[in-house]
Image 1: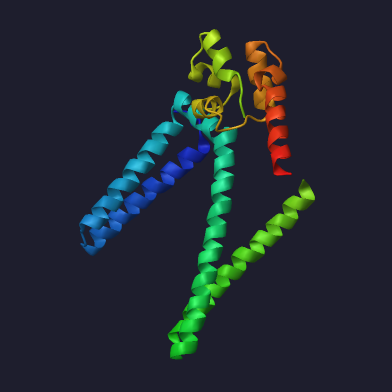
Image 2: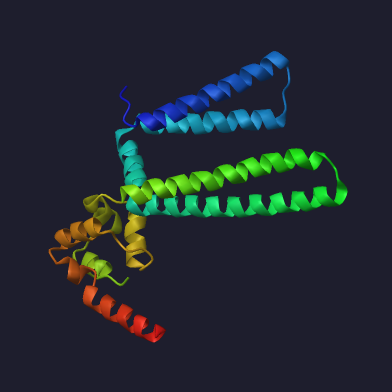
Length: 139
Length: 77
């Protein structure tokens, strides 16, 4: 048995282990629900298929070509960039909303939300700036 | 960007998958290039040109695309 795609193998194994752990926890707690069963099934299916793919030479080659494909890489970059912009905008809008809500209601619960949102927004902006500086200097 | 990929591929009796395998990309990339939805990188264009035995300029219709871009640029001013 040869592993042709190490990343897929690792991800598949990880998902399978998660599925097994989930099943074991449900058995220990005697807590069986539809949600838990669906989660287990999905984890086993995904993990099993990734594992099977990693052991097939032909399929692994296809997966590697897809990963290295320039169009796919461009799409990944564009979607990550757009996702970051949208997340930053939404975080900022929610931050402003919470500030106005606190100012209007003086409800201290909003402070916790403000801190969380503020941290998330600040981290995303700072990492964006640092990454820009890094790639600016390298290219 | 307009290219001659589809024209040259069909003349060579090649499928999109076969061309994709020769130039180390996915068939989806070849489809997008033929639909003018994606511009190939220089290396990819060079690989395809070598497969078909033509120059990159001819494959990517560079002169025609340049003239079109020049017209669009002139329309801006």
